Image (cartoon, rainbow, N blue to C red):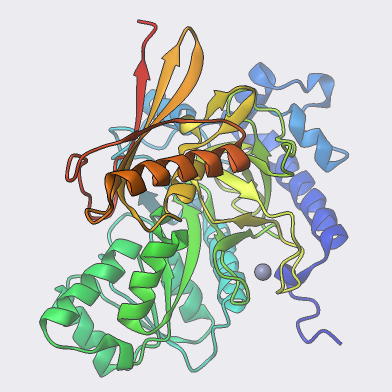
Amino acid sequence: MDQLHGVLEDLDRAGLEERQLKQLQSLLGTIAQSNGFWQERVARLGQRGDRNFVVESLDDLQSFPVTAKADLVQDQNQSPPYGTNLTFGRNDYSRLHQTSGTTTGTPMRWLDTPESWGWFLESWAQIFRMVGLTPEDRLCFPFSFGPFIGFWAAFEGANRLGNLCLAGGGMSSQQRLSLIADNQATVLCCTPTYALRLAEVAAEQDIDLASGSVRMLIVAGEPGGSIQSIRSRIESAWGARVIDHWGMTEIGALAVECAENPGGLHMLESECIPEIVHPETLALATADGNGVRRGELVITNLGRVGSPLIRYRTGDLVEADSEPCPCGRALLRLKGGILGRADDMITIRGNNVFPSSIEAILREFKELVEFRIEVRTVRSMHQIRLQLEPQPELSENAAAELGHRIRGTIKDRLNFQPEVQIVEQNSLPRFELKGRRFFRVDEDL
Ligand SMILES: [Zn+2]
């Protein structure tokens, strides 16, 4: 017998879809009555006709319009301070969170009712079960608990499960390291960058984190959690397992890496409907010649009834894993986590190519120190030029041969031949964490 029988994240495909349809029908029934944002949007942009908010199958979702972050920002600007995506009266909302505003210029505000917030915490309960949290785990959140949503829900979610939770707001990195050590914290929730920063401070203080109490780091907020080189640095510094996690202020906490299969994210399809669409046509992505289904992640969340999102464009580029996961769950798995931003997609000779796929191949070549990927548009056609900086000890011949091998590997895997240019030592910029190695050059202009 399956000991986890009855747990939502372990439903089979048919069970998940049945639950999704029921929740979707219930959500749409509620917002049809009172949510001005969706009433207006579905009437104006949807291909719904007289069906309005009535759906008979999950496929019906395709006739609803997609919504992007810019639409939400515009709505909040037009109807300040909270916009019109509110299903209930103002007094029914008990929490306000807001984004940092770094991408849109103005912070986006998000209200939750106690029920919607409870749904958020239920997602975290599923996440914690999937990563193997035990009642003995003590969680530390080295994070400033301000209006940004990050880690509030994780904190309260773990707290609701009965685990000891340590808030690390208003502390220096050194004080946080003491908080972890004094309380023998076993799980840390933070960004990949901050996990490395704490490791750096620990090293300065001669603290050996690898022999410390932390056994797992749940990281979010940056793509680093699924990038092997960054994971390895965090894992060796802390002597602990890295678990990647994904969520957004306006969407919820809806994806996590399972304990059994590193390097990917399961979508919590018990709480949302994910779609993978072509970023330009917005049609559902189909498998390419190599059987890869890749595109932009679009999400409908099903339990945040007070301020729901239907077919929301995350802007994140993902690839569906076609292999069954060893954990046995039917949940969609995103191979390699979030691969990058969907806006970066380019079409070369009929193939959809993302700079992140080229980067993944380049990183396999240890003889390469640094690189730059250039997309040139010549007579409306895309071409790729790679500037490659090899290890200093490589001879000129060996460097040329390396360029040749890289070109061949890219041709085999991505079906196009890039132009390859070997550049001189130290001619390309170096980066700490978030590098800028992808450039567009328009030669038509
Ligand atoms: Zn799994």
